[in-house]
Image (cartoon, rainbow, N blue to C red; front, side):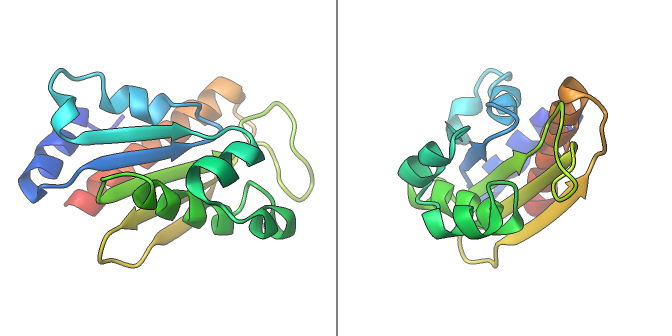
Length: 156
């Protein structure tokens, strides 16, 4: 896992506050970021938006995006990360939406996770990672770790 203390130091150095928007990880990234004492000066808030309704209500995700692309899509990951910025005082936000398993479909297999990374003044980045059918716990941990690594890269 990415060194949380390093993320915190870099965010403090740049004067940035962090928000998260999580679906399949259910708050695991927020929990990791707040494991360290003193994280309150860097961590702004976390949105756990497991249902589509919560994504719309809390983050402003477009119902049309959900209908047209599904919750597990780069379009929705982008809207989640940008919504986390819009609904908080953070300057950097990471979003996660995926299929942790068990199950999935031919179109959206188990282990597919979409990420969004939004930062004020920069273009939002999105990507999809195919972790594969590792099992629910392993996919969620891998998604958490990848999101933390995205934050660290953004702060480097």
